[in-house]
Image (cartoon, rainbow, N blue to C red; front, side):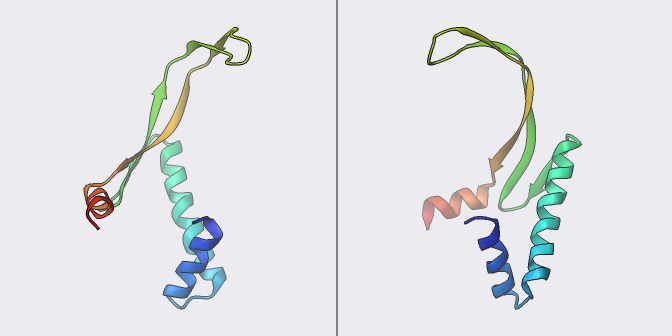
Length: 92
């Protein structure tokens, strides 16, 4: 499911105009995005939690040439599945 399909689903299930459903979805993702940028944590009970993880720089290899390449440090988003979602996926 992509973003536009999610908007359509929200609009259909809650009998909302598409513009209102789009605002709801955008607000939700925007809030998660802002919290992660501020190095916060977003927990949605029964679904999972979003955090960021810091990765140190390292020397990697270009797979095509085998040449050593310096990879800088970075911060990436991380999602941990909640217990209820994991259970529903494995036992439904």
